[in-house]
Amino acid sequence: MHFQKDEAWYVLFVNTNQEEKVRKILEKEMGDKYKFIIPTRELRERKNGKWHNVKRKLFPGYVLIKAMMNAEIYYKIKRAPGIIKLLRDEEEVLTVEEKELKVLKILIDNNENNIGISKLYKENDEIRIIAGPLLGLEGQIIKIDSRKGRAKVNLSFMNEERIVELGIELVDKI
Image (cartoon, rainbow, N blue to C red):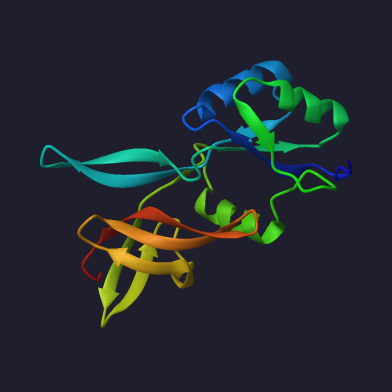
């Protein structure tokens, strides 16, 4: 099996709803020289007639790890409880590609690894983002559901196109 020579981002496939537990186990076992993130997104949800902001996982069942991967680290990770597998092909452990990281970093540019709510307005059926993580990523938006306060966004993750819902707030033009 081949490993990258440099530090890179890798993806762990874990049992759904065990992401946080796996992250804590790995942080405890491997120390703080590795970075583990579980990307989340903020959404507005209605409960009992009131709107609340809630955090949901961006990619349920996945934990991202930044490491300089070698055989020792690979097998240490594989033995951790709750991990199904490290994403890989026949030859090597797969890394998150730079172009995918670029979009993720724009969206998740904070310490909480959370995608906040973007503010936007509609003008003649055209969407204009005025603030938030979707600023400059208008081309990724497939559909707006202003009633639910969500935008369906096309993201590339591990060479697959995924449509995720991100939180939006529709505002009057400033």
